[in-house]
Length: 254
Ligand code: MF3
Ligand code: CO
Image 1 (cartoon, rainbow, N blue to C red):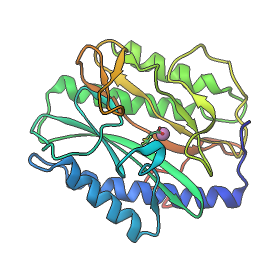
Image 2: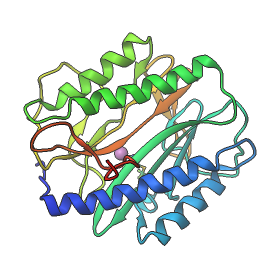
Image 3: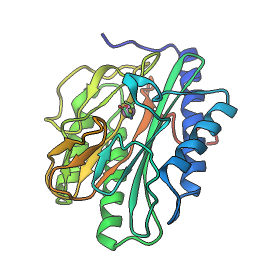
Image 4: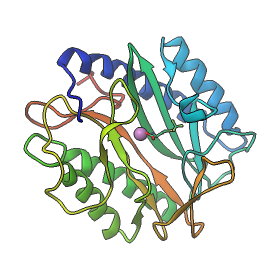
């Protein structure tokens, strides 16, 4: 069952998502060679708590940390550790917060120092795929119009979408219905309605789409060792016009 949110509830979700956006920006600014992913995790937890939020991932199905920090061939759910970032790495930062009983969820992929042009293109195409998906998140469209737009853009660049993990509805739970795949034929699934809040999150591999999970039972990596990028926004379907991107830092400043 898809739980529609009232306008008042969407304002609370905007607050939760704003906390996530602000904290991701703070963490992003600290990224440089020599910083450990544990350093970033501590910073993220502190910054969420001073904003009155609760880290959403810590303790979720026994996930141990606040942040997911996925480096290079790690697709999602990389667990922060003593690992230090190196020049030329890319790192996916995925963060969730609970504010007023509602979740916000967002992810970005960031360059560490200087990265090769090909790597920068993977990051750029993944971000573009997210925004093309968001563009389809309008009343009258169906769910897989989002999915199809993401897949089309990624594959036209010669990359692969990950199919094992999907976006999701979000609200009082981190994961609500519907699932939001990053692939599929257009025009399928539920019709998009005002009050639907979705986390859209393309995960894109430079090589094949296959992934595997490491011994730590969390870290997903590309099966072929190729690089992977991930972007995510929490968005609300509006009564008319484009979706409201709740986890965008400029949200509300327009
Ligand atoms: N953005 C991811 C998701 O929505 C992050 C989940 S990490 C977990 O699934 F630890 F909370 F599972
Ligand atoms: Co998510």
